[in-house]
Length: 436
Ligand SMILES: *[C@@H]1O[C@H](CO)[C@@H](O)[C@H](O)[C@H]1NC(C)=O
Ligand SMILES: *[C@@H]1O[C@H](CO)[C@@H](O)[C@H](O)[C@H]1NC(C)=O
Ligand SMILES: *[C@@H]1O[C@H](CO)[C@@H](O)[C@H](O)[C@H]1NC(C)=O
Ligand SMILES: *[C@@H]1O[C@H](CO)[C@@H](O)[C@H](O)[C@H]1NC(C)=O
Ligand SMILES: *[C@@H]1O[C@H](CO)[C@@H](O)[C@H](O)[C@H]1NC(C)=O
Image 1 (cartoon, rainbow, N blue to C red):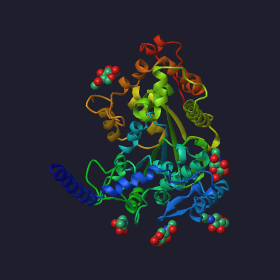
Image 2 (cartoon, rainbow, N blue to C red):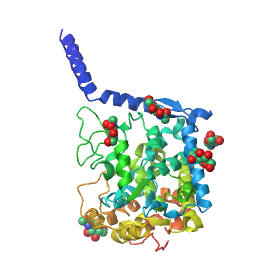
Image 3 (spheres, protein in one colour):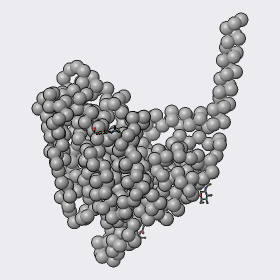
Image 4 (spheres, helix red, strand yellow):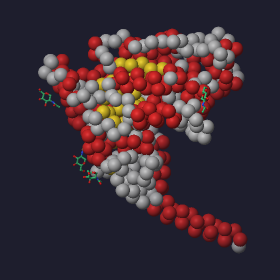
């Protein structure tokens, strides 16, 4: 009798919950999440590059997409033929902050997000592209991703969201979405007029934090973008700077690349904490056992380091196409001298270094024991940067030094020979470098 009663109560509770959740659109959200878990695309055939647009599957190489490429070629031709000059951008600057995860790029991105009314800033728009192009087993085809990243970035710098929209799941309806990744990290997407009146029944996962807004209307975002003097995008997803050459050659854009790097040993240490699920092998190696030379994880680390190094080598060689457009910055220098480095970055981009940015830097590089989420940008930078040295097992540092050696040498990160030097914070591992 009692059991029956309990079951009955549970049933009522369940029904009530379903009703409430339906109201809030949460259930549909959850099922979106579940269906996303399965790799949307199959490897092995050409049509795995298919991208959902307008609710149906189309090939990336479909006419719209090819149009983007052709248009690009046309502009490249005009540019090379000298018919258009680079001044077609009207003094407008297009800044791309290139980094990898756990290099402090959210923090450095804020330097531009905080600039003020003249800046249109986007935080990791390529998240959607990567997600859509991820194959079974979590891999992506580098060639395909590179062209998709390039074309989406090019459109975004021109305030055109249409290609990005085709990568967003679920597909935006009438250019309106509730699913833009980390919308709240772009001030430009949370201010008037992009912030439309709040809609009670609509659930938006990455909603604006500073105020309540309706779902994101890309038409409004695009209009706002067109009105801003400058545009900046941060991305941890581009692997090779070289692949972005067509952006430089687009006369409508005045590109400025800032590549942010960090000691790969510190990056690994930080990733093992932040993405702990994906770093189980590293954690096991840290506590016991040999680290296999030919492990997939080690190869992945090497691949990452090689990409970063090759991009930097491309930039530092100063080829004609990158003249005045490339700057390399180490996270450690920013953490130690945030104001000086920010000023240098602004000088490089040719944009006024506003007092709003200065105030933000002052506020966020000092005092703040209370905020310390893993994605937090607010921390005592100079104190944080060397913490990894006392916790990272020497064994792991050794592996990184082995596979990322050339990158470390290029960026001026000193090798350590033993555990004592690794954890002795009076020994600096950062060589003074001048990449200018
Ligand atoms: C998407 O669908 C709308 C109407 O349903 C149509 O007008 C538009 O041309 C379509 N866009 C693409 C890219 O197919
Ligand atoms: C590119 O140029 C060709 C010839 O100049 C022209 O026919 C074509 O429409 C252009 N394509 C685009 C996408 O502008
Ligand atoms: C990536 O995709 C391209 C274009 O479809 C294909 O030619 C190439 O073989 C793929 N590369 C890998 C490693 O699968
Ligand atoms: C998005 O904004 C544009 C521009 O104001 C407007 O015309 C359009 O109706 C809006 N879309 C929706 C679905 O509200
Ligand atoms: C931040 O770290 C620096 C260097 O360790 C230290 O001098 C400073 O007092 C710290 N500031 C705060 C507010 O903790």
